[in-house]
Image 1 (cartoon, helix red, strand yellow):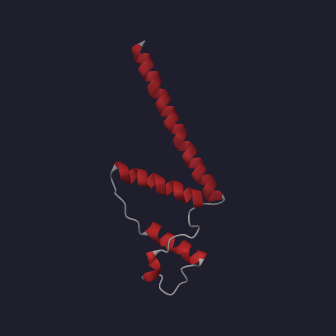
Image 2 (image 1 turned 120 degrees about the vertical axis):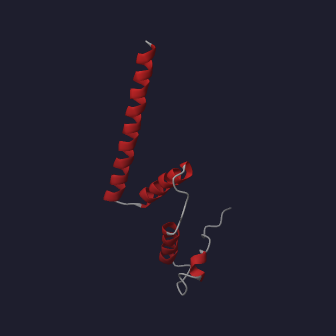
Image 3 (image 1 turned 180 degrees about the vertical axis):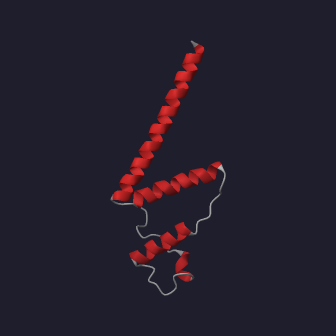
Length: 97
């Protein structure tokens, strides 16, 4: 059975010294600092996929208008991808006939 308490962030030893590590708000702030200081690969496929993962994670945390904006952006990107695939498919089929 999994332990329901999250791991203690090492940020409480340096950056957040003096804050209660069991406080949910302090834990959320430590997670925020981890996300802000995360340096991943750039200009690579892994970097782009990491950016998509970051966008999805932030969209899942968003509420209200920001959530709807993220949903609209994701829907728009999917619609553009679907149109591009459809257009390419028509080109290929038109070329063969």
